[in-house]
Length: 406
Image (cartoon, helix red, strand yellow):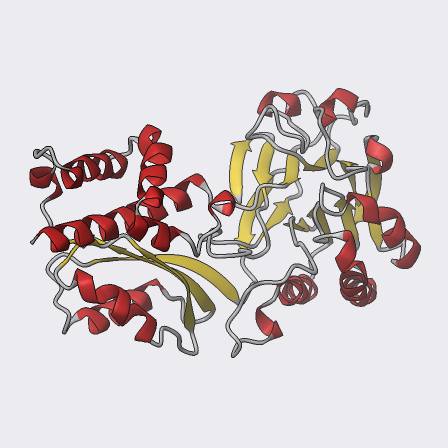
């Protein structure tokens, strides 16, 4: 019986990217460390090849740092007889010519240079596997890469694997817009995709999946990250499993403050944080406070005094959506300025985001609201981040209004 072929797949390594970490955490938790863990896994598990679906490097400025890492790892992989088959994405498109001059071409293969589909056939355990790929030539690709697909169909019974960096989420994307239908009638039985940082199985046959980033780049990229291990059995059936190698993960921890006293606050906070932590890794946490808070006036004084870190977690960001102990619905029935603000906060809280811009402008035009916003660059906020900030500022301003009236 023929041996199974095992292919380790990853994408969006972004070697050279700097991850914001507290001072007491070292380079064991950086992007390059996660990549080195992936290589160690490949050698330890004796995989047959590594497939990389673009954005291997973060940018041209990081070339020397990233190239040193790649050269070191390819030397290790050559000793283990494990080739890398890769394509470039929008971040590393301009670098493949430099990489080709430095890395050993017998072990590091870049497919699809100059935005032309290309294939390579490698042998594993006496079996031929064809790899098909297409690479970015610049930092954007405004057309569907399948518009240039011209590779012939392979013989019946042969196995092909496709590698591509593309965007299946936005038809107007400048990063290789494509759709699931484009993969049909092509030879590959599996497609290894890069660009989207969250891993996702898009289709079972042919198998189409985003690898996701090897590790979350910041607290906005929660959930599990890593790579995929493909297993091709003697009948050509492909199965897959996830591989998580990064020592750093990100999690969101939501703490509801309804009924929580000031005295119990810290103990409850610590307990909830530990529930979100995987003690085998370091966890960066986005802490979200919600619900009515009986000690609202003191909350912004208490939070900066807390030492919210340990040897297994640190708080990267606090989103304070705690509400003053006010009945918003009752207040909203009045006709004064506080009631108008209460109605708009209720609408935004209930998902009516059409009022977001007008509400943020109104709050900023208030003296207290302007003070709350002035430390934030609103242009860099996502829609969800802006919504959270407007709610946070709105609750603060509303509470101050009511205190001044009473």
